[in-house]
Image 1 (cartoon, helix red, strand yellow):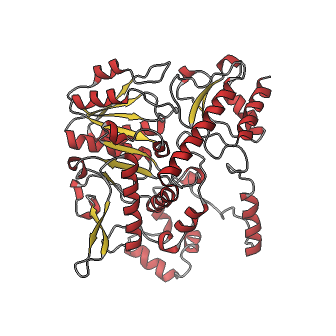
Image 2: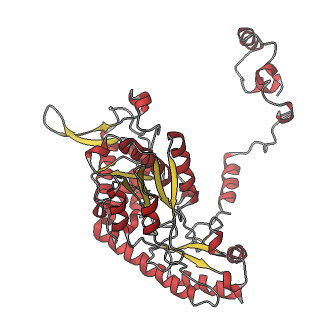
Image 3: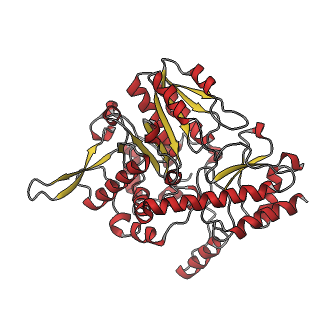
Length: 462
């Protein structure tokens, strides 16, 4: 990098100023600042960028680029696996886009605005109601980081160093769990699941639970879409050995299934993206985190917003009541090094849940289950195609196996994409499932979309 180019990035500096800076650092030239950068990768010459354009030309150019994108409303999209297509009511975008929320910094300090604190308090309250847990924090980054924090929290509470996780889980969550656990001296053990039903093999779980088991982690519904039917037994096995039960959930499903608090979950984590947050090309996400009991409260990462009253007048007031982070003078005693959260996404979730209410959420779940089960029925009618792979109740996601068709699943999906249909996620992480993919059907999918998917698969296989 030449001195002339560096000078270009310091437009107000003079040669005299640059010489003073170099003298102060005891350097002879600007190039000496970059001696650690190999010469082979240094830029010589000018950047290859387009010529300057007018505002109108820039707008036209950007619109042309954006027009090439396809959204879930432009073309059928059956892709899930961690980020799902759900309808976001216009009111959510309208309220969350108000300047009071959109410009509010995530509340570190006690002087954070009362408005954002109240919104997060309402969010916490609704997550507690949804999961039947005692406490919820004001959100994490995503499901994966919430799981990692839950594992470390279980270690602090129990003093044990092992966590048991299911075999069929999102590889990104599994990787994050390992990254969080290993530096804390924890070991992640895998519990096998039945290849036919997908259920946790209780006998195998009982064998690997020991006095060193900090927690057993299960997902309900699982990464592959099916529900765990013996969850009470798993809860008892974990607690009988003095361990905790961590449950990962899709919060939408809690409109129809038993909440984790009712079957003894100690910590609940999950992904809040379905609660009023668009897919947004994969982010940002919203990590749900809740726990039960005062023993766990003091070890919970993140922050809790509390409701109190003013000394004068007794008016309602909100403040941060639990913030055991390194930034709040905790330093090495902090429960977590997470330094921010998805506050605006949490506000969107609060608005979304407020709009639906318990009855609306139940009806939404019923709609999703009717449509997803219709999709399974019509796709399974195609010769050589099996869905679902696992004999268990499913929610909005299900596995499809094409191994008896004689065609590769990635080829089928590529040809569907050529026809304007985004199919599911190819399950390369589980080769034993064969030519399999994970499909997702929610309230945004119409009967016509599902019929078109099945018809196009049938034509491609023919």
